Every structure is written in C-alpha cells, then in structure tokens.
Length: 120
Image (cartoon, rainbow, N blue to C red; front, top):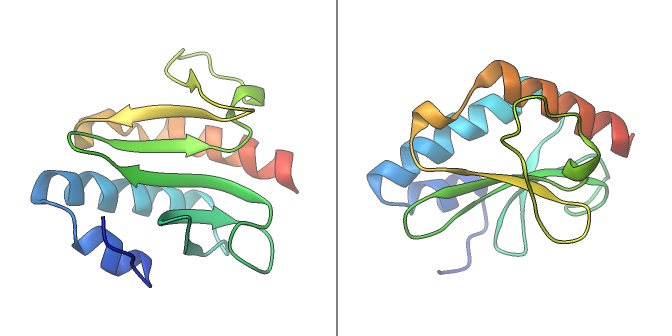
C-alpha cells in the first residue's frame, strides 16, 4: 500500500466496501474519543493521547484485503463481556470488521473509553 500523509487520503484509497467500513469505524472512534485526533503512524490511522502520533496510542484501524482491523493498544486489559475482542500481539486486542454491521457503536464506545482511561 502507498504511503499516505493523512487519514482522509488513507480511507479514500480503499475500495468501496472497505472504505465504508473504515469511515464508520472512524466516526465511531472520533465520537468516543472526543478531542483525540487521528494521525498516520506506521502506515495506518492511529488515535493517540500524546502530542505526537504514536505517543500513548489508544486505537487504530488498518485495512487488509477483505476486512478492516479495529484494534486497541491495551485491549487485553479491557473488559469485554461480548467476547468479540481477540488477543493480538503484546497487550493489543482486535476485531476484524468485514461489514459495517460488525460495528456496534455502543460496545466499541465502551471499549474505547476503557482503553483511553488505561493510557491516561
């Protein structure tokens, strides 16, 4: 994938299905993490609490061939009664989004608030 300067350019570069998923995920993250801006870091959008991209990262989205990953940096420490968060490397946890219907705004907002509080 090409290198993108902005989150908007990254999302716009995706095919229609993945773009729709990424846009919905982004809106959900932005609504939950008010005042936390997304920036490109390691080639994909990351929401961080620090002054620079990647300082105190909270969440990310990253597109693959048939899905968009939504991940939380300290997601393995997040309470998840739904069981949807899958453990990933280090302390991360993720969900693979294959359609917009996979995004439960209330559930994701709860996860995002917990993840933000862990980084604060």
